Length: 185
Image (cartoon, rainbow, N blue to C red; front, top):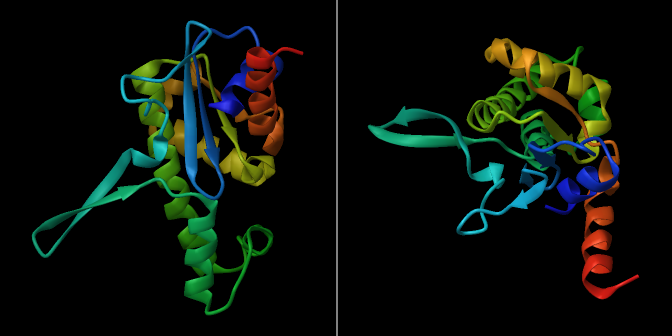
């Protein structure tokens, strides 16, 4: 919510009326802006994209849901598969040379892309912004846009997907905006 408010007031969605924002980091968070205002929903869960089902599998006759996962989950999956602790920088540095990392990354990215595409189909936002440190990776943003527009090809004509212009600081700036709005300057 804070990242979306910062981007609405000072950043990439200034002047927009309908925007969705997803932050990808330790967790998956997000927000929805409708008519230039933060939309929270009746239970204050609007924009909680980490709860959005992206697919499911059947295992032993039971439905096993799959959700978009944060960068921390990507790092953990790669670390587990490689048998050593790695970080996001290592993953992006070895993405093209290591087929294990590439497979995990592609599956992780697909879940995020499905979530974004479904949100865009449901809300028809002018923009969908992505925040969190991973959004500063040009490779990630290029791959993400290709995955979303590849699966939802009609979206490219009416929804712009781009990183938060305030980068990883959008949440902090939005929190300060709320503080100053409520407690004066």
